[in-house]
Length: 199
Ligand SMILES: Cc1cc2nc3c(=O)[nH]c(=O)nc-3n(C[C@H](O)[C@H](O)[C@H](O)COP(=O)(O)O)c2cc1C
Image (cartoon, rainbow, N blue to C red; front, side):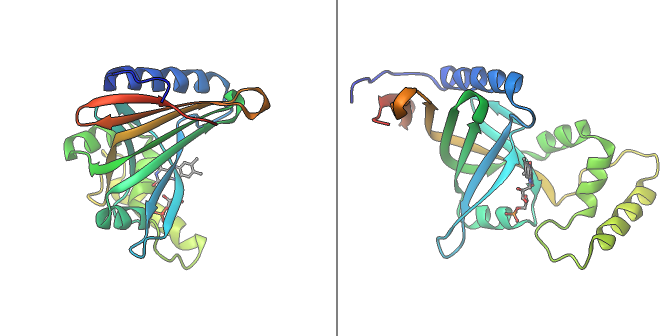
């Protein structure tokens, strides 16, 4: 270990936000996209992309359908990992920790900010369930569009968010000749330690 530095969660989040802000300037789309790794009941890794919707001292928040495969897996094993890869910056950030549901009030507040058609899409999609054909989904969208008419679209109770509270964060920056910079922060009790690792 060549560097050991006590650091606050706030400083780490600030570092992450700096990298995300730089990515937002350069990436063509979805700089907030992250791979979310969970595991099946058999212990097989399972990974898919989701969008980061909030990050603060409490963790990294994303939203999804609570009937989805990922939600079922998180219900059985809350341990998860996130991966951001910003190609144009040649950077990655790896995050590990346990996931917990956000509050209903927080999910309601975020849902209310979504475009109306995305709100209706949330009602129409039985995410991760078999779909007979595209037309069935389109029919469900039409049905919910008619149901809510011009009124407010409430958040479905099967749609909400999860927050991953980090216990390990790695910042990785490409350097020439594959001699990349890697700094790994680990939460030990309530203090973070930093360690540089060989690339
Ligand atoms: C760039 C990108 C962003 C995505 N964002 C989300 C998201 O925020 N929430 C979500 O539920 N699915 C999102 N998806 C779809 C998921 O990758 C996945 O297909 C879906 O959630 C079903 O996964 P599951 O069956 O493992 O639950 C996104 C896909 C891509 C490619």
